[in-house]
Length: 245
Image 1 (cartoon, rainbow, N blue to C red):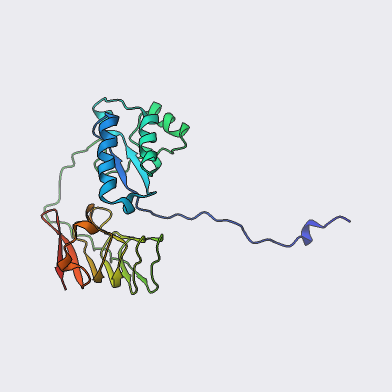
Image 2 (tube, one colour):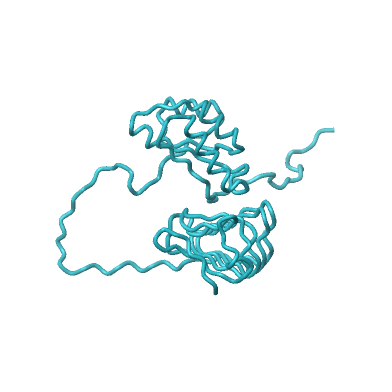
């Protein structure tokens, strides 16, 4: 017995593509000595093993290629994977390096930077009156009311407000400030797009790692005098300051 296609029940979609933003560490290389790279990378991982464990990683070869210093992509990839890091992209590579990376299953990422080389045009100013300053866009806030469990990673484009605890092994990231009205045991990274004015506020500091605009401290670096109490964390002269609330 044949089935009429028009009578076939419509099945719900099994998948969907969505655009999203994630914060991924970028390994910028200034030296092509793979032995030195492995040694220094081991030292970085040793300082924050839980932060780097199975962490995705993009490696950037732009500076090396600017200096015309070649590097073996296969050896570099083995070093990264040996340290339980997961290379998910290459950027700033030559066509040959990109092909080597693709052969390793590593995609090519484009470099988006305001300082990228581009023609610069000098424009003569004809108006004498200053132009009105553009209105600042309101900063969006993301409110989370449930606990963040171990293994979860959360990213907010503006401020991130959590009304519960952040468990050990969890990671929260925000382009703006982070507020945790509970115990902060996981990793908190504020100002992840390079905003040095971002701050972290929490009611009970027991974090594995705290970071603002790339400057970070791990739990071993935290003074006992600031642990288990309400604090705010901010940058001052490129140093992380932890102050009681």
